Length: 469
Ligand code: BGC
Image 1: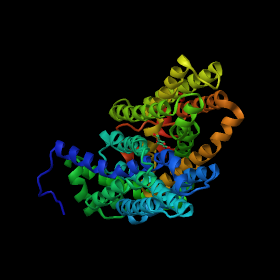
Image 2: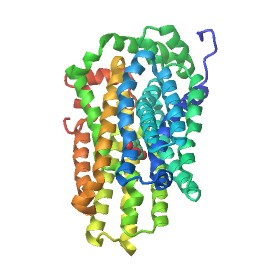
Image 3: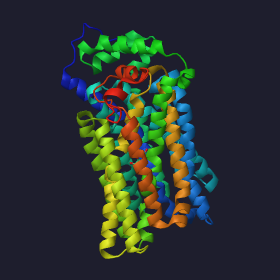
Image 4: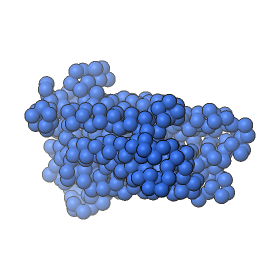
């Protein structure tokens, strides 16, 4: 066990250590992105092995992962609160390996469907436990950046999956497209074996000596005692899952659920999952559509890096509000292009449509993409953090499922322009909500945030919300 007799690590060593830790755990995010993205290309070739697959069966294969994710998110919180964050990541990595291998070797459509559910369970679990773990181990000053490594990994996973799909298209090897995810899944498992448990979870369990042994490696020694005291106090204050219904906690819970639902109903995955379909329907050639998709994926990654650099400097709220405004602009540009240019876009209209797409995705990546996952790792009390994050994560995957399965029907009913106008309106509603309700958490410790949100009228609602100031 590390004790005060050991020399304290330098600031540089601490930083390298926490960045390395966060990068290992964020492999869970890479798998989240890869497994949700890979299906778009794989779908083109699965039908060749399992002949007679209807388009409904293909849609089911795509969306059933989201059902699995809801199930994964449902259990992961309780498991993470009970057995700890680290074992939960290990179990998740093992489920990833099983699901991915099952998909790669599936002898029938039915088995492939089961494999997608299994992968979904791991995706759902990983989507909540990764930000949870990183949030609790990160020093407050760089917590925004570190937790958002997860979003960077998600977007990188999506981009890598597009590139793999593209690279393997000529061999039509959909099994390898799925199977390649075994590599990050195995790395996550092995990497996690060398990680320590979250210090906050250990404190909440009364295992302060172990927590201290972890904290001496990842904190300035002068911060450790205060952190242990704060977390201990907070964990004795809240006691059970019933507290989820406590009015003070309900406030934080509502913010998390609203962020979750808004993140999805403002349309991100209609773009992530369907952009090539949309573009080729709009008259782009197949390879132009795929290329535009890769560029869009690249912008998603690049702007997430910008967000990581800014989150701990300018704060969560400015990025969320600017990003959400940009998303509305992107959607309006898309809607107007289809309204004026018709459903078959030529010449300048095609470029303007792509510009709209990139503005939208880039704005999502700088705000609502990372900020949702970051805030739900910050705003809940330690004792029920896992379960509360589960609730927000379930809402996110549930809303994702609803939007994904209804999108093509929506397009049929409202047309391209109508659908994108609808998303623009929903984005504006989200913007107003964020402006009025979402707290700033930059530079606050998790216990401080917990304290602020638990005050009768919310300290932050008086000081940080311009609307109420
Ligand atoms: C969302 C996913 C989305 C991804 C795109 C994540 O924050 O939760 O649904 O596919 O961002 O970058």
